[in-house]
Image (cartoon, rainbow, N blue to C red; front, top):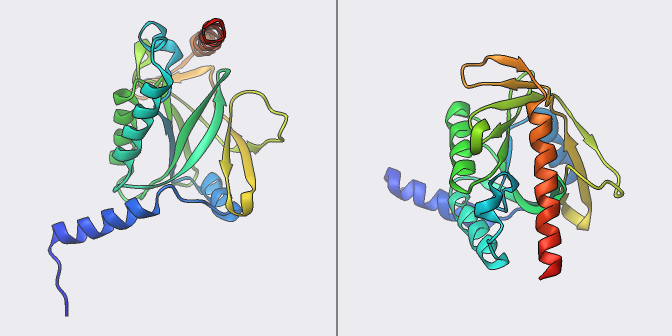
Amino acid sequence: MFRFNLFQTYFLIATWTSLMNPIVLSNKTLINLLNNGGYAIISAEHNPNLSNNEFGLTDEAIQERLGNLSTDLTNKYLYSNVLGVYDGASEYSFLVILHNDLPDRERALIYRLGEKYNQDSVIYVKQALPVVQQLIYTTGPLNGTYVEGQGYKILTTDVTDNYSSVQLCSNVTLTFTLNFDFEQMITNNNTKTKTQQLIKHHAQNRMRNQLRKSIRLVH
């Protein structure tokens, strides 16, 4: 009978997880995640809210940053690749399947990764009844605040903004958007405030993303 110490066990699990990533989900598995929670969505692409720092990043720099995020996730979680459009800009993201055993710690980890890679926000969906669905701001003056929502909507192929597309088994793509209430901001101490600040914030993001597109076209 073989006996492994804790390090050996972790190494074997981490190696197995690393070899599996990125995984390809079935339609049933993805719908189950969307219905019941237990996942996060995070990227390492340009942050329009940090335009002065981010405008100069080359495609190679973004690819390196995405690779570093992939490394941070690998050995911890299984994830699937996501291609989405948010605030008018297309980006590659990771749909991370959480373990759901220590939800507060997992939320904190996803939040810290958002900070580390200068993301405007990350999505955290806790497996619970009802599902806890949050978009958490991780940089800038909104850092630490978040919005909540319930549910999602499956979209058709002619959608143009604020959606996520996941390539599934048999070369099928499922495109969806998550519902959030951007008129109610929640702080770290769970204070809820009715505001138009977040709507203005995302409108500014769209303007900056459009400006970055225009600059890239000129060059």
